[in-house]
Length: 172
Image (spheres, rainbow, N blue to C red):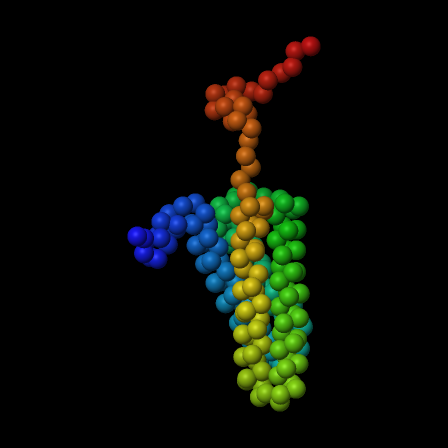
């Protein structure tokens, strides 16, 4: 019977397991950046939660996109606007909307219960973190199955490329 550790090791040896690990590490970077930003904006600058959430998400999305695309999924070259950039930012906007509603509700709760500024800030940071955690699994599936999928060539095209023969020409 496999132990949890040996099962996890076996899964990490697969291409999907390696992507999941790199995606997880990329998420750690994004979480650190976005949570540091929201805690700074709300805690130190006493910024409104909607603006703080917007700025935090925007700032964290930039390194997240680059790390996910290049490191987690190993894509090189120019980004494809409609297949990669727009969908990635659309998911970021979805995450922003979800997290912004969540932190606005947390802020309302904090104000209604007269929580101290430090407690309010920590509550908002925790809610912001949890909101993105909810979306984390769904984003992995979308990235892995739809966005950063290697372009698969038709078997005949791949065979021609390996043999060095150019594409067939129709003869009339």
